[in-house]
Every structure is written in C-alpha cells, then in structure tokens.
Amino acid sequence: MALLQVESVGVVFGGLAALTDVSLAVEAGTVCAVIGPNGAGKTTLFNAISGYERPQTGEVRLDGRVVTGLPPHAISRLGLRRTFQNGGLFGDMTVLENVMVGADRSTRSTIQGVLLGLARDRAAERGAVAAVRAMLARVGIDRLEQARVRDLSFGQQRLVEITRALISQPRVLLLDEPAVGLSQAERDALVTTLRELAGQGIAVLLVEHVIDLVMAVSDRVMVLNFGRVLAEGTPAEMRANQAVLEAYLGSA
Amino acid sequence: MRVNARRLLWPAVLILAALPPFFVNDYVQYILNSVLVYAVVAVGFNIVLGYAGQLAFANAAFFGVGAYTTAICMGRWHWPFLLALLAAALVTALVGLVVSLPALRLRAYYLAIVTLAFGELLRWGYIHADWLTLGSSGLAVPAASVFGLSLASDRARYWLFVCLTALVLWGSANLLRSRFGRAVVAVRENEAAAAAMGIAPALTKIGAFAWSGCIVGIGGAMFALLLGRINPESFDLSQLLLHFGLVMIGGLGSLFGSVAGAVVLTAAPELLRNVAGLEEIVFSLLLIGVLLFMPKGLAGLAARAAVLRERLYLG
Image (cartoon, rainbow over all chains, first blue to last red; front, side, top):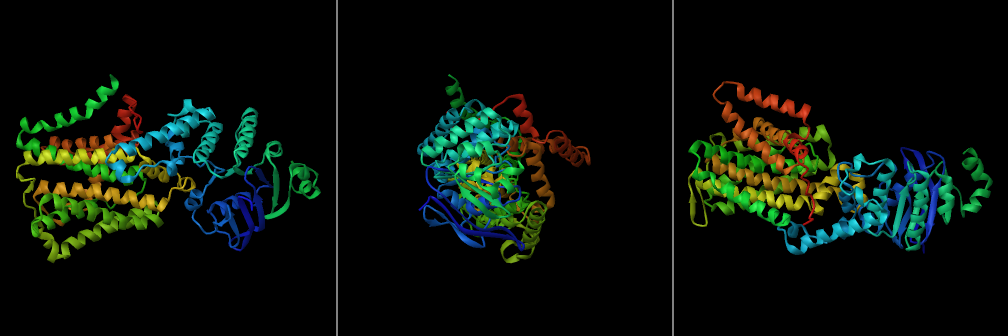
C-alpha cells in the first residue's frame, strides 16, 4: 500500500461540494503533483489530508493507518509535514527560531528539566540548535539565522518554511505552491531538492501552478477540476490528455 | 574571557540586589519591596499578554487569588509561609487553567470581556464569602517566618522578595528560551502552522495560562506579606490597569521590560505624590506615549541601544 493513500474523499462547505470522490496514492520515494484551475479544490485536498478540514466521506491513510478525524498536530506527529500557500511562518521569530519550532517534537527536553536548568535538558536544547544550524547550512540560509522572518524576501521565506518542514525528517511532505515568488534559478534548485527528498524515500505531494516545474519534478500528476479528479497519470500522459488540455493546460 | 564575564554577571547582580537594606530608609525600603512584587506580577502577565498574545484580563483576579490563598492559609489556618506560598502558586495556576478554557474558543475583545467579568466576579466572591474571606473587612496576614527566621520588617522581607523574584525570572527565562517557550510564541504567531509542526495549540495555551497564573499567584503571596492586610478593594479594575501599564510600558514579550516597567511605575508615583492628581496624569500620559511612540516599551528602547539578544541556549 502507498505511504499516503486518499480514498474517495469528499468535502462539502455549506452544501457546496469542494471535493467529490477524490482518490490518490503517493508511494514512498515519489513526487506527485496536483494541478488544476483556481478553485479546483487543491488546497482543500491538502487541508483534508493534514487534518485542517474533516472530510464528510472517504478516508485518508498514512502508512496504512486511518488519520481522518485526527487533529492537525496529531497527524503531523505521525510523520506528515506541510507548508502553507499564504505563508505559514512565525513572522516575529528569527529564522533559527522558526526552524527550531519545526524540531519541537525531536527536541528531547522536558518541562521540569528546562525549568530547573538541568544539564541533560540544556544539552538537548543545544543539540537541537546544532541540528538546526547544520540544516540551515545545508539549505544555504545559515547566514540568515538571526534575521526576523518577516524581514526576508518571499523566496527566502519559502526556503525557511521548507527547511522547517524537513528538520523533523517527515515521511510525507505536502507543499502548497512552493515555487510562488521564486526566481528561475531558485525553481531549478527546488526541482533538485525535491528529487533528492524523493531519493531519500519521502513521499512528496505538491500543489503547483508552475507547469514547467511540475512536469520536470513529478512522477505522477493529478488534475483536479471543480473538485473532481479529471485525470491522473505520468506528466507525459497529462500533456497528451485532451480533457486536461481543454480544462487547464490549453488555457495557459 | 567573555564567557567568564557572563557567568559572573548574574551573581554580581544578585549580590548588588541584596545590599539596599543596609543603606536605605524605611520608606524607600517599602518602595523597593513593592517594585519586586510588581516585577513578578508583570512577568506573569507578560506570559499571557505578550508571549502568548492572549487579550486576557484576569490578571488582577490571579493576583487576588494568590493573595487571598496566602492570607487564608497563614491568617486563618496558621500554615507556615512557604507552604502557603506553594498553595498560592498551585491554586492560582489552577485558576489560570480554568481561565484558559474560554481562551480556547474566544478571540480578542470577547476574551477580554469574559476575563474582565471573571475578575469582577471573584471580587464579588471575596466580599460575599464571609465565612472564608471575612468579606469587605478583609484579612490580616501575620508576619512570615522562613526556616526559623522571622520576617517581621520590610528589610527582612526584602531579601525573601529578592529570592522569589530571582527564582521567577530564572525559571521563566529558562522556559521561554526552551522549546516550550518557542511553542507559546509560535501559537501566538500562527496557530495553524504551529499545529503543522506537531504542537498542540490548545494544550500550549492552557500551559501558558497556568504558568502565568502560578507566577502572578506568587506575586499575590508577596503582596499579602507586603501589606499585612488584604481586602477585596485591592483587586479591582485600577489594580488591573496598573498591571496592564507595567507590561505595556515595560514592553510586551520581554522579561527585562517587565522588571523595568515595575521600577518605573512603582517608583514614579512616589516621586509625584506631593502634587495632587499628578500621579494619575503622568501614568496616563506615559501609557499613551508608549503606545503611540514605542510599541515595544522600555525593552524596545533598550534593544535598540544595545542588541542583546540571547534567546537560546548557545553558551
């Protein structure tokens, strides 16, 4: 069974169907993209998977385990991380602090130990700082460590958000329009990064409007239209699909 | 050498803080004691208002619960001070937990109104629960003794207050620069994103309120000792307004600011006491001025003067 399995999920907002009978499977080590016109239900699908919307019908399974109905933080603790379309950062915190929050679950300090300043817990906190700094260096934003996230450029903010998601070593990664605001060079770097992540066995699901990027990075592409699956297949198959061309690609 | 200097900083500050009773007169001693009480109160209020970003105004209520718990335990049940202090901290933490429950559902103005009402309800309770609080005549608080030392004078109490203030500051600083403090701020900044990091927003808010309550409860216990007698009128809206002023003028989300706010707002009225009405006018102008021109308060000024940001365990 696929690492992330979405089975016949339906979401209704006040009588209006946002998603109808959407099924999707993302295998470990693959990148899957969801595309579709604005209002097609892409972000709603993300919210239904990560616990921010409760689907009225269907099920979401993470590594075989049903997670439908769990709150977002519980789903996150099972190894699913997501980014947000409109900035999910903690604006008033520094880059270091933002990514430290991403490492919250893997920081092994206890509340009583921290309160009393015990050596073991101080060491756990320092260890987390070291791990985050190593990660920032790998992504190439270590010199921004003390910058307040609110003061960064849009592209830099995206990088921080992805880094913050990766620090927890998730098994499933959901990226909501990660290429918005990125330059061409940054987009190319993103493609490389996503393929590397897939190479490490992570299941990557992304919502994206930048078609070139989607075609370059994805193993599978799903096209949503009016909350329904219009087509699903390899990038090449999507390019050749007449319905997809009419609904989406052709209009671009 | 820099590391050594830093290690010596806090012991040096503590030693300096222990000296005033040898030099100052009784009046100044009393003011210094008040400064310490309000420094603790400001730290506690800042956790909810500044760090957690919750517009909750139950702080005078927490303060009252801490003071009344201490007064009842010591005055009526003859408990030793340290036990009464522990009770005050725990009971007020529990009250903080209760107040956090509406905060899970209500935002901004609605939460402000509910918590204001809660404070007034408690004040009504102090007045009418005669059997426990002796109503509006209030409760006498006997002099504390700690480890066999009687703390009957303001001078003696000062050292106790310095120790309690230092403990509160140290514990809060430790928590704030740990993953727990970061979680509180993260939930303030973006609740959905914090949840996506595996942080439970509701539990984090409950924890912040309980932590705030515990600290303000300790402040209330100190207040009971300071006055030696408490009554319901001590915990009315003007008390709350003073607490609000401490945090806003000191600086939201800053421990240093909380202490600075306490120094300014406790010492300044004493200097202005000789001119009728000036106290209130200066307080109001100060609050307006800070809100308009320096939204980060005294702490914001200090941060601009010297970039001293050590918010993580780095050394």
